[in-house]
Image 1 (cartoon, rainbow, N blue to C red):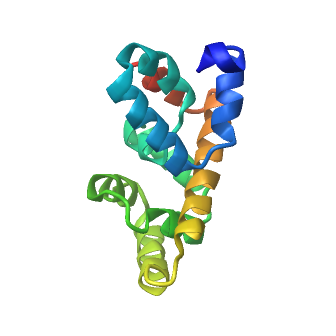
Image 2: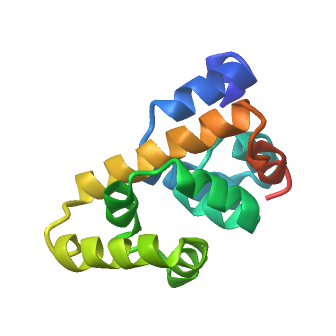
Length: 143
């Protein structure tokens, strides 16, 4: 990919224009077809599931910056391990609010709303990583 688009910076820029679903499909395809290329591509493809790579203190820092309604929307239909990691790192009050939002919105949230919420959280992850407040890019290099 980097040969076609012009290096790591261009791959990162391209990745930012894709949805979480598209990034996930590309990384899964790349991992199957070209594991060596996957290793080079993966650090530039931040996925919503990468929240699992954060340690608890980093995740708590991220969660403190999030709108709980947006977080609840992003959590609709996610893997149980990811859901548990996120909710375990919320305060009791925040956990209760997210639970209430999920009860109200889980049936009415469209796939595009869920994707938009996840993409907004990914954007925050990238920002905090670029600022050095979390170390996600280091963890993606070994993922």
